[in-house]
Image 1 (spheres, rainbow, N blue to C red):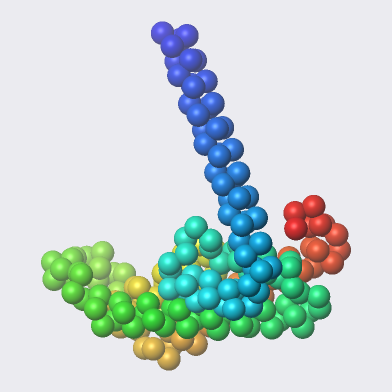
Image 2 (image 1 turned 90 degrees about the vertical axis):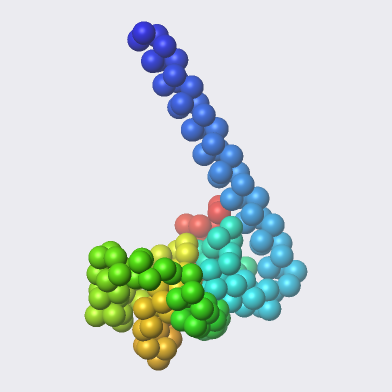
Length: 195
């Protein structure tokens, strides 16, 4: 029995090792492909991907991969990093606004009245409405899926001005942090092996 358990354990460890190796190599291929596309098409492709990422449509090329790659290719000064971060945050917010408006106008059709009366729904709505400003900032700091914050914001009818302003602040903090980090790492030589 112990031998069977050890064999199963080895098989599981081996399977997970192969899976993670495949996952890392796939992400490397996506980054290499995306990097060559960014070099070829430049700023318009960058803004388009950020817009689509803001709409929550690019899970396979998340914002945490797009901005650092673009910064590594094109940023030569701190002013370049600042402009890349601002344009990226604005593009992300524009995409999020569309998703927000969609979920605000059509979202109720997809949620049943029974679900809306549930305790979880009422607590979530209360917390999001009460803490909408800090929630929008913090949730936009997550690297993957940060554009999807617009869905609950639209469903719970958070004011559009509040949504735009605090989403912009959250995206801007995230973009400035990641882009300045990449730029600083390249300037000091710490990240030269990676880009």
